[in-house]
Image (cartoon, rainbow, N blue to C red; front, top):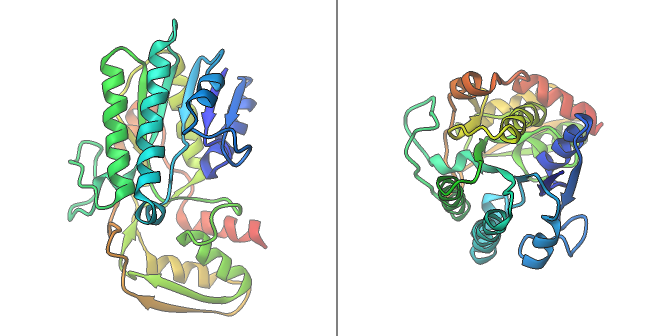
Length: 289
């Protein structure tokens, strides 16, 4: 039995279904399913851990802007709850394996690209700092004997049920309904990764973890950068209704540039991104139409 926290989110919902298709049993846990399924509730987590062989921990305050607006909740959810969950794992007679989802936000804003997993952390915002601390907690648990592996996600997109104000969703939504695409930082460049690609990588990481294998942190990235202005123009090119593009200054608490090196994931997991940003954006627009 595999516990998937954050099972109703962009990645968690697809992953939970994909794990079930392999024949494995899962237990979903997400506050969106029930107010009682809250990672801040130690008793609820303890109960959810019964009979569990492995944990995929996706639950988090997962948006940079949310962390800026409520730092205390971000810290409690992303750090304190993780600490409690790892402690519960360690107390089990047979500790479950553990997969932790971190973020490319830990790298901050760097001049050089592509960025490898060994690059120094330079967190720029509350969310990034909680992910750095989360990784430290997981590495400490691994040093104490827990089978624990870390992946870092990068600008994941691809579900019509995603938050409508996330940049890919916002541009896809404008392409479907018409309207204005507001580009905050036209030349900010990111490594967008389709959710189906990310789920394939996570399934491989789950497989290795369940075999009790330990690997260094990996990030799931395409190795290709797309500026926000290019993204907006791609969406406009496939728009169903009239759209316009306006440019604005970037947010001060966001890294402006990230392109990752996919070599480690390829070498250790046999994984690579297969869905390019234009293909993925077209699929998303079609799913919203």
